Amino acid sequence: MEKTSDLIVRALESEGVKYIFGIPGEENLDLLDSISNSSIKMILTRHEQGAGFMAATYGRLTGSPGVCLSTLGPGATNLVTAAAYAQLGGMPMIMITGQKPITMSKQGRFQIVDVVEMMRPLTKMAKQIVHGHTVTSIIREAFRVAVEERPGAIHIELPEDIARENSDAEIYDKTGYQPAVADSHSIVDVVHKIQQAKTPLILLGAGANRRGTRNAIKSLIDKTGIPFFTTQLGKGVVDERSPLCLGTAAVSSNDCVHMAINSSDLIINIGHDVIEKPPFFMTRGGFEVIGINFFAAHVDEVYFPQMELVGDISSSVAQLTQYIEEQSHWDFRFILDIKKRLDLSIEEGAKDSSFPISPPKLVSIVRNIMPSDGIISLDNGLYKIWFARNYQAHEPNTVLLDNSLATMGAGLSVAMASKIIYPDKKVLAICGDGGFMMNSQELETAVRLKLSIVVLIVNDSAYGMIKWKQQEMGFKDFGLDFKNPDFIMYAKSYGAGGHRIEKTGELKALLEQCFEVGGVHVIDVSVDYTRNHELLNACMNVNTTEGGCDDGFKS
Ligand SMILES: Cc1ncc(C[n+]2csc(CCOP(=O)(O)OP(=O)(O)O)c2C)c(N)n1
Ligand SMILES: [Mg+2]
Image 1 (cartoon, rainbow, N blue to C red):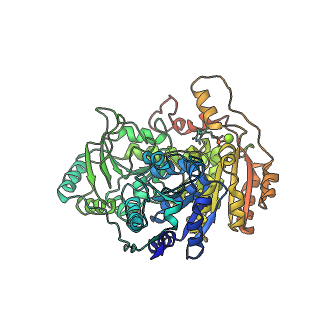
Image 2 (cartoon, rainbow, N blue to C red; image 1 turned 90 degrees about the vertical axis):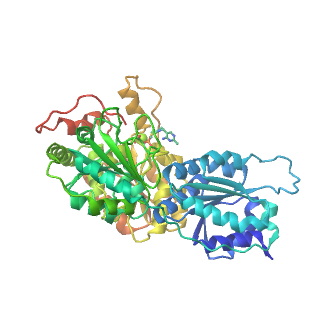
Image 3 (cartoon, rainbow, N blue to C red; image 1 turned 30 degrees about the vertical axis):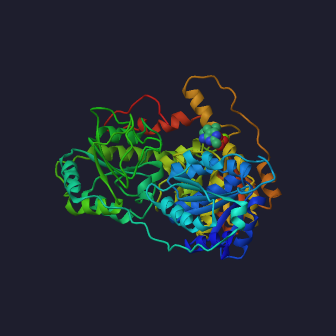
């Protein structure tokens, strides 16, 4: 017989868990004590949301579920946004929350909300442990379900009295997960369809960033010469410096890449699903789409693939590559002309030295100082569109952004988890002044953990993204400006370095110096969003052989 909380921790160890992120309450004290006697490191955060974002990022980067912990009621409600973040983002994560004793309690309904019911729509599985005997099978099942495609969030509620009771349950061995593979008949049909097309294009989406598909996809591109573009969550699957890379669909329509998409008759979509903001809108009679993903496509008014290959992405793509042959009737001239426009517009943006800094210049400086394997973690705001569009990712999962829940407030925690997982990589968080202030208290966690990360705050004293939309929609400027604390003093009060640039030319050296010195650094960078629309349209206005579009962007 063994105390149930000890047994749970042993089961977590056997699943390979190295960290538990969270804030315990009194209902978790048995579990906390069991963790203290284990190999698992407890990472205490300053808000449950931060713990959840970190656990989700652990899952996103390693493929194994990240684990987070909170108390009942308010601790669990604070985990809700992180649950949605992991669930929509396809990140395996397990949340363990406490609960009052279920067999006998003297506290009435104090702090009690039905957490399992609350978590159900936000998770793949939500379950209360009601007996010590079932605990090991529930843990095994939680880890199995969390990683199975499409990965996501799991909730387990552990009541205080169950954590304390004895159990003789035995631990189940960890089993690997192997996605099923598509059948060879469908591969033949897909090869035929692609070979018949006039201008096929490859789209790389979130699923392709999940489990090592790079080599298979690169071989397909190398063999066929078919140009490719990515969704925001598909960045870095293949090195974006490739001459065949048309960039990222950072908005849903009317950017350069959409001119290419609209001139194509067939999109080979590898790994994108509709939970991400659409990279394009399908219309009836327009280009067709072949969906290649681990699971069948959810059909939507703007997404209804005509053909699918359902199964392990690497395997489907490797089979495609084996059978497909480059076709002499494929015509990519117009598409590669668009690629020139995009490259030119990015080069132009890098020349702007005005201050406050312009978004394209900011992207070019960051790209310049980050090594190929360096990680940028983006919070949500207007600058994210610019990084998605102009920052060429060299390696998979080096641009960590959220294009599914698209929540503000995750950027710093995501950067922290990345640094914990990859202590030797350079990690830069890029947050708006709005998003940074939503979870800035995690600076204390970062300083306490002695992490080396740099946080760049894109400062416009406003919720800039919404201000831009307000203007685009013809509304008057109202209700979106705020005042910031002094970010230098704020950072220093946490024991972090605090910096501000007064000229655009200072940023590169300052970033380099912060990485060199190590520790936590906050850099306040004033941004000029007033020319956002004009700059985004710059690509369309570059003069090449074909005319551009003149209607506005839809983000
Ligand atoms: C938690 C949350 N609240 C609100 C929004 C809606 N929203 C999206 S971007 C944005 C403004 C972001 O402001 P900031 O972080 O300052 O970045 P900026 O756009 O100004 O660069 C808002 C309010 C959101 N995505 N997430
Ligand atoms: Mg802002």
